[in-house]
Length: 298
Image (cartoon, rainbow, N blue to C red; front, side, top):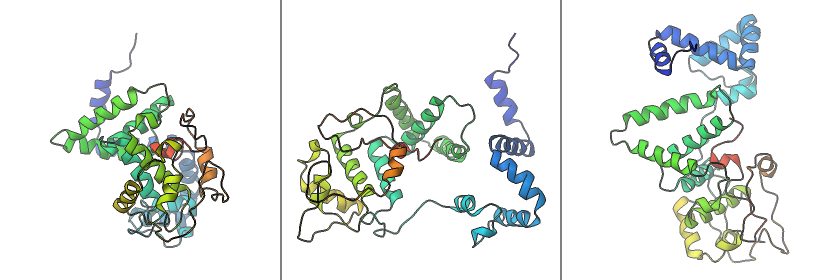
């Protein structure tokens, strides 16, 4: 006989807990899921007054100026204190764009007319559920709760409709890789331009350079479209007269430099069928997990 409580009973029980009990349960869950947290708690925190004082400062919102004085080693301390990368308009190293801005634009073009946040959350959760793990990644806790709150607050149910669209988009493609065929022509060439800019950071780019480094089937694109794209999204153009840069993926007198994050890209590829346009050198739009919101394993 199955004596396990049904989901409704579990929900009623969890939501009836006192605040203290719920917070302690959360703390226990964190300690169970993180060996590093347990080692720190029973080691440095339990035995070092300096670590306890530094942790109190963090709880009070005081980030140590020197990360060496934090309750954790400098690497984790920097990540705990970090905020979303932001560069003032025109100051990013990718033609005025920051890496974060490039990734955000790529996600928006992938989402198309769908709400980009709903699109990203569906992808993140489907990826996690597909791994067969039971413990929900801690990194998803706060963003998911905030997203759920936005759904409940939405009086027009817009987010719910877009969430359903995103679910259909990914469910219809279950069991196969997602690639250029799943996005519009207009979105695909823009994503390829952004990937090129991301791979080859420089102060500005020639319109011809951006067009010539597109996959073959996009190289008939009107230069005007690329100029307008650059202007709209703040990508600086190099309008000086001179030699045209080399084209990646075909023989040329000049070779493009190695992409700035090529080693990272190779280690983060998604399996994807080869392009059918004859240009084998260009990567798939989605061959990096970050393109769907996964910088590292969830």
